Length: 61
Image 1 (cartoon, one colour):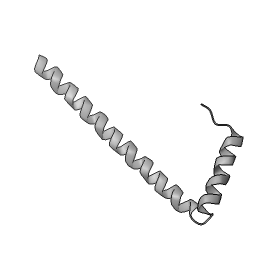
Image 2 (tube, helix red, strand yellow):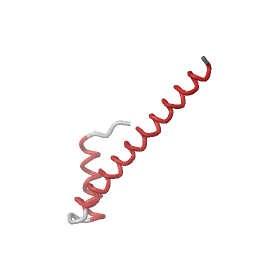
Image 3 (cartoon, one colour):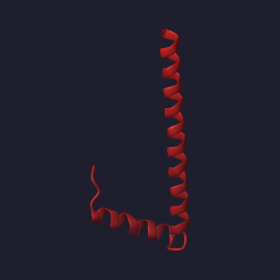
Image 4 (cartoon, helix red, strand yellow):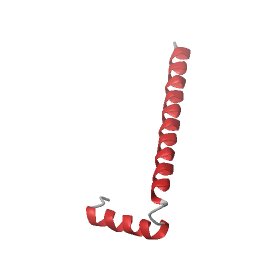
């Protein structure tokens, strides 16, 4: 599913109408922080999985 420019503009206008122009920067910052925390957690999980794999490989030897 690809979103084109028209769809993105329509979504932006709907968000603008729902939340107002003053709240959009606040919502954007919150969304950015949430994405950052999600990526941080994802990296932590990946690191834990790699550590578990290394432990399993060492136990097999």
